[in-house]
Length: 492
Image: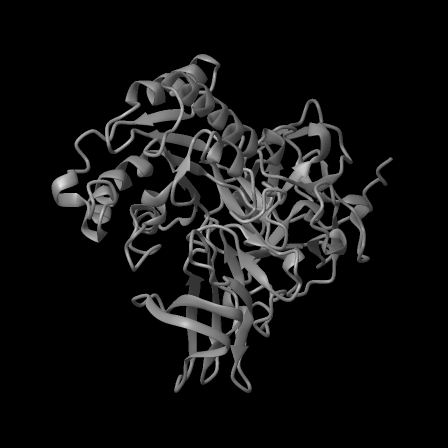
């Protein structure tokens, strides 16, 4: 049972009217509250959520990354389990994403009861994960759950760390008012190690080895901001590595290994992005990353992670083979970059939809890497907003089997990403177009309205846009990206 409220000094009527409209029903002795104006939260900013009453911050208990871990109040710190960002759900509602786990604040079991647990859960965009952000006159906010209509609440008016965060009927008490404190570049500095929260991984990385994280598919990359006079990278074995400093042109460092200095003679704060040539076919380079090497006195700092992510599923065309500047010359990379989205390519040369005599993406899409059939990817690692499939060039089965397996692939993508938009591109060689369209229609008829066909007829002229009548050269990829980007923009 909730403890009755102690006598409290109310906010002045003038201040309250600035935050909400108050209708006083004197005959009934009731006060009705309507929503305050929505707050202008920045979706690319990380915040600490600090309670007005206690001064304590919302925290995921114990830094857990497990779905169902409870949110509690804790002494404010720079820990990433106290850092959250607001992901737009539309209609004035946001999901509140925890930085350390990529999961979102969730009213457990969709409860509408006062006192329900607030936990973290994989992002499914459910109404119990959507919150309205209402600005108060003092700059604090009220966070109202869409499913229950109740406000995020400091339960029992606690003032001690470890106390519960819950939901309760809206009452305009300071226990339901929260300050959003931007973290940004003022978060904790780091040392560049694999466990440094400022080191951001994009794509699928095999993290089974605590000393070396291995890029699983083409197009993975790592980013951070850093200070100091130099920046380097720890590599396990020989690999072709590329890097970009401060968003500049990507530069290759071929056949490097060990502790590699990327840039020296620096001052101030910079950003770095690095990635590797994909391991596939006869190329056996080792795309394993052991962390960044900082100069004496240097440190990492946080960067803003894009709030949209695109995953491309494909074959050598999506990888960018045989072009030397893949992955960053590909249509996949450049269309996502044009939209400011993070991205990755679950793609390999020679890949098919079906598994018969081929690397079938109907099965390999589910894997962490293209090297281990037993290493299943954990799809709650991050949320994907858009999946783009470009397969069919290497088909080795009947058209009927291709269509059946394409339907199965679409089903598996939907199971893996319940809320993503899915685009099925027509094959550039203009084969199996009917089968791809039929697969999309099958899913639409089954009630999935977020699966779409992309008509690519005429996009690629084999004579002028490819190097071998099949694989687009860099200019061909640029042409495809120019045609694809506005289509992706409709769905992201």
